[in-house]
Picture: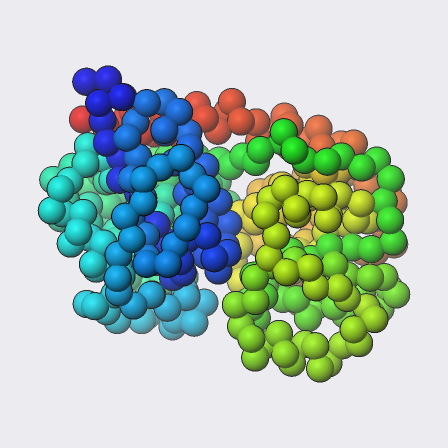
Length: 357
């Protein structure tokens, strides 16, 4: 059967409406996968929470139900499963008319368990590190019973899952669209911070960096935790930061390209951090807290970024003095070489074709 005759259904993240920005980088990955598979001739359907919208070239089916809690707000041993959740409703809806393959983007025990429910191949795109015990256990079971049906971003992410046989995991990698990334060889007097505004993203440390070094911090991203954001606005002078809101990829490229650096301060295990690639692609070096994802991108590449121990605010602030030793042209070239569209496209299609019946 040719690709044009096959249907792939995508399970969206269930923590937020697709297109809201509150799901983080995985929202963009869903759209990227959908567009790629559509271009290959597959019929693509995205199942997502009611209120979602997308620019992806795919049909959407919106489903009612309560949103899942964010992983960072759950205890490691949390085993609660909400039977009226949007995710459980998506699974029931999908099971009425199964496609040729299901591609799941939801980091959730129930979504993973669909491998044992659906009578068709199920692939799971895992975009987070180890955070929940029941998810870890299900990943181990699925990877043993359905080898390479689980895809992860890189080896550093895989290492966070205890007992995982990495030979049974498909390494997908990551990519960004370079076509509109604006390269600026010379910077202005500001630095960037980009991400969901939530405690685990560590925005307060980037604000301390700006305060200590007397440099403007441009902030872009959706406000996920209003109380946290309000406390930061009370604590820090508005003179040191400028909030740009949630920006499209094109708008983001325009805003950040003249930054001296992007400050990336995750206080949890970050599996990747697409923001780093978006910055490097514009020639903007990255100063980041050491985490699996940041280590994967910046480790061994001292010419494009600086890794700092998590919560070492003094070290973070002092890194400002090293910015001009970083090479903006090398930043751009690194992304073009290591995270090419061709390489990622080949990986995704190999993963799909391996599992497609």
